[in-house]
Length: 340
Image 1: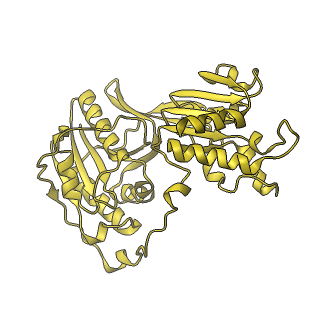
Image 2: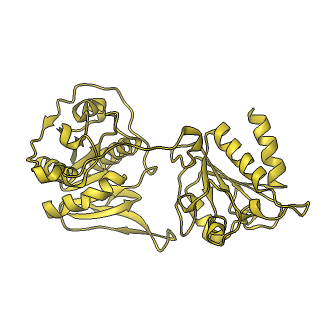
């Protein structure tokens, strides 16, 4: 069986963490199947990026680089990915489920006559057949499935496999020629706009996830609202711990109701059944009750803790490893003080 780890570089020419995770997945799948795997890289500095994983055990390396693929773009990325898949002649293609590949690989699969599946949580060999796993029904059901069609392209979610690590070397990646047409470059990125470092609240690789619930915006024990203080405590923790920020649906919905709320919170921060499912090593829930729709988004957090005034809240019913029964304002103020 021929397996291909299809990767892309970042703006700085290095491979993202999600790409290194796919290298681990491809190596493991090849070992289970008794086959070989190759590595293909597209983007700026693709050859140098292949050298960075030269010791991963791949039987061959392929690269497409140059100005045409220096920036993410559907037309050029699709043509380059299709060319790399055809050059490798792979039966199973594993790729990171990044925004760049999620946009272009369905088109590349169509051009090469392949089948494609996204949000893959695991890949293995069962009874001699490649089997993929993914979540269904709002991440409540884990399903395993296989396809007879080849090639089969699988976009693997980040955080499933450990990133590959090893010494760099000389991969001697084979350059793959791609005939880009003039129309392929009609779309161009004019620049990059990013928030200031202290304004960034979503950090997928952060060691800690802090989730804020609607309790922060309710009347406190003195009968008054303390939304300004709540915002200062939350942002202070995010900055000092370099944590990522999540939210319950009830909190982000307050904006649409016209109620005063935390101005740095949006639906992008929502965690749970109708939001995201993060994979941080640790998580701390504050002013959330731990109902099932919200807690379902925490299933991949390794260590879960919660702060709540109610000792019988949902988090205390086996959904958190530790529950601190107390006032979140007082506890987070003390935590921020300890963090300096």
